Length: 292
Image 1 (cartoon, rainbow, N blue to C red):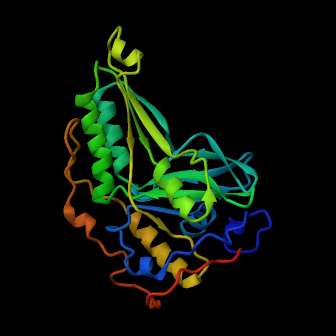
Image 2: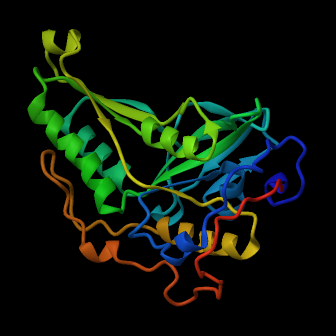
Image 3: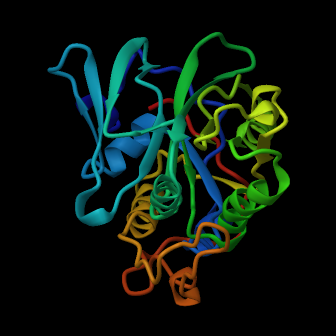
């Protein structure tokens, strides 16, 4: 963890051309207006050690996703990833491909993926450099636009597929690629999809076998850049992420075929209502940060 706290790190790829979070974004930074967000994984580790920890003493090194008091993230991942040229193994995560075998499995899965912000790990590099940076991509499932796309996709697939078994994939690759292109970064957007298969007890489901019951939802939204080397801005981002990862209040169980009932009050929270730091948020040009 020490290497993530701002000390110079010769192994860390350059972020010199990656734009800092703007003062205009900070002025409106609340859980109800952030749909998606990107920041270097190293910065997220430094800001939220209660929920994300590296265990360098393990071999291979572990990234542990903690969910204390039902807060934290739903980390969608494979078994491992690379950061700063090192291999890491992930513990306590949701597999990016899940098989569901009953309506109870489906109900539990649907409630689980929506009860916390989603977290994905991907890489990108400056267009003029071969060095990659590992990024954290956060999806705010509390935001009504994001929530509607995920729930709507799950609702529609039930009535649109043929047969009893089906597969549904959610894809964030396009929206992240567009964001990085504006920052003059390139990415393969690996690790930015997740899917589930619902397999009914049918001896032969021809429609599923021939791919007629496989659907993809391309999730869209505004991606907010939360990267900054400025200490005051980092404190604002830390408070915002802490608010986003607070435990959700589950108002009712989710139906298999309709939108879940979530209180609108949970969408109108100001992340810093009582302890907003005094930061100059007057309009100004976006900052370009130097290497840590």
